[in-house]
Length: 87
Image (tube, rainbow, N blue to C red; front, side, top):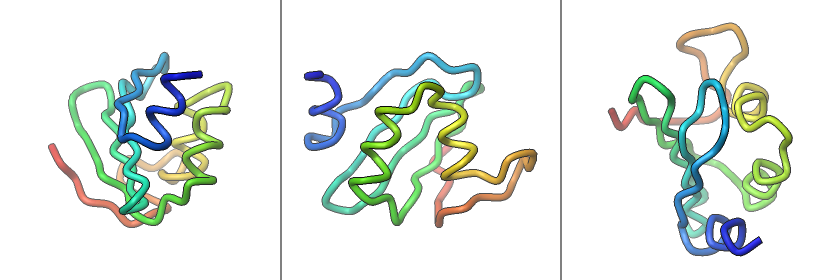
């Protein structure tokens, strides 16, 4: 519970168990979410509400949540939210 509060309110880095995602960080003031993928790429997504971030923490599959909310399933390059590639 403490790590979820830290993630939602204090920009805490959350490491996740996923076949595709390593870690996620939420920036509530800017409504942005950084996602680090396995393989080393990272993206900073915009227009991520606090509700979106909360549903991420509750998702049984973090990778499925990313595909359903940030990416376009089956695409290697399409995204649902505005983003910038960090690395």
